[in-house]
Length: 379
Image (cartoon, rainbow, N blue to C red; front, side, top):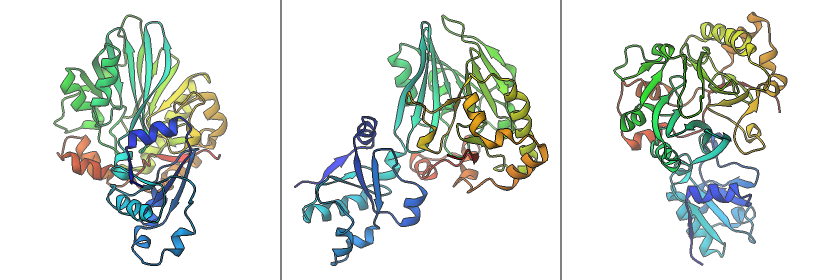
């Protein structure tokens, strides 16, 4: 029986169709617990690679099903291939995930959030990272928000709709992944917008977003309001489309709020986050659909397949948004940010244009899940 190879995109397609998949992850236990392929139809177990190098196979054989296909996974695919070969020699139906978790981290899945005559809103879900970005299409124009570094993904979406990317926005300076905003704007001739406070002293070409609080584009008027929503970073903004869709960056998530501690000014930024939540966001109606830049759980998926929820639902389940005491809110958020995103200092330097790296280093820096939320609602 030959060992099969499953590409990350093939795996996503199978999971999206509801196929049940049994995954054997052979990384060390800490790496597995920190980050692994997940989903409602995934059964995933962890048996470290070294266990399969021993002549004694009784232990791992007790844990593996003999009657269903097994997909072996690791960090880059090399160890998984070796283990899949071992399983094949023992009569198992085995395949391995090409490029492992690093390959999985580069899968983008476009999902249409909303469409009506004249314009369309698409969410691109980077499923292995929990990173979300957006393409808004109207007539022959496209606006891209919070693009990842794989700019071809956005060019393909725009091309498929006969559109040209003319506006590129980063809602804030990202610290968990490499932004593709500057590169995408450069290769398309688009304007790159970000708050000027996010790029102080940076050599990167950009247009200050605060100078363009409102603009329209396309055959139908899609009014885009850039709303200052500081807290996660001082220059964080959210975009309100047609008064109905809030692209909230890392300010408001389906299950939490953006953490204010990554800049070393946790208490100061938590004060700003409080004002954002209880003044700016408080003014928006419950039926506004919140579409964030990240998510941390399958629970944050909408029934229609994208990640998002109406603001009223988020208010009802998110304890932090009901914590009206300023002092209690600030104390809680300034003291409990959780695990710091790995490599966030170097990633921020890259996104600020202070450091240049090659694609191999970018892949290493982005390894692991995002950790942008400070608090998540109880589920």
